[in-house]
Length: 350
Ligand code: SF4
Image 1 (tube, rainbow, N blue to C red):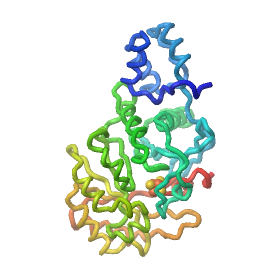
Image 2: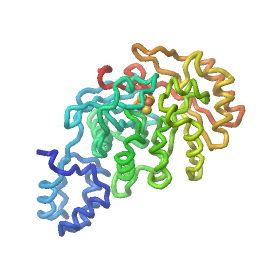
Image 3: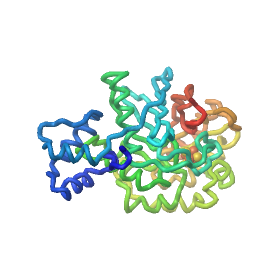
Image 4: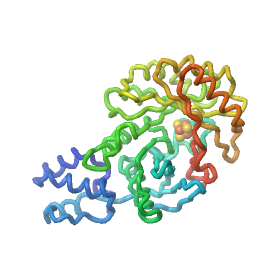
């Protein structure tokens, strides 16, 4: 029954106001509803005394508040949690929350599977099944928040959102954009604009919409190598959307003060971890206000790549810093439960 209704979680604040107005109802109810469902993350029906019986009836008859179901979850020693969520059609996705200084970052999926087929990625082995709806993206956040409320009371502080889970977010541009608008809305979760990061493998058709359509959230590009041959081995869509074209477009993106373009660099032993590799990276990103996020490769069952030693990783980082390029070595939180970057695959990891 619920699938004939509009999901509440598919609506921006303006969408909701428009629905109410066009049905002769007071649009002020939008504030009450966004506060209830987004600011307080309530999952029970809103019974606010200022909601008229007419509005309650309209909501009940026309909107669904269905959320993904937590099928199972895993907690690692470092308090990272990986959820396997079941969607209304039975498809499954993964969402991860990662602790950082008493707060959490949530890593959201944007698709069931992924078409980009990156060779290092567990998700890529699934292929694309379908795009997620906005409500299924928002739903991951609400479900994770409520899990924290139940299992780690007083820790329900999800302050950062990264689209780095399953899927290529810019391949599902409309749903991801709308989810960002909802996350940013001052009536609801009110997440800070620079607390949201969208990570792309370099999907140019989506990137080309960025300047005109995407609110000014952070962009992260999976770089992984400045060498075309190496990058293509890792990210096959580089053949269709070459790195030079992607970087030329990224150069046009206006940045706010203190905002960087994030370059993700998955470091693989004896593949892209040399001083020459670091020099090449510095050459191509140096003028793009970059920050390089070095991610030691997370092996998964059957992967052909290995993680470099920490000495090699630190030498690479130092080489970038010699060019005055900020470089961070990302911790490998969650890898004991296959929740780290590139390890998500809802078919095989539970
Ligand atoms: S790394 Fe990202 S874009 Fe590439 S296959 Fe995996 S999920 Fe898709």
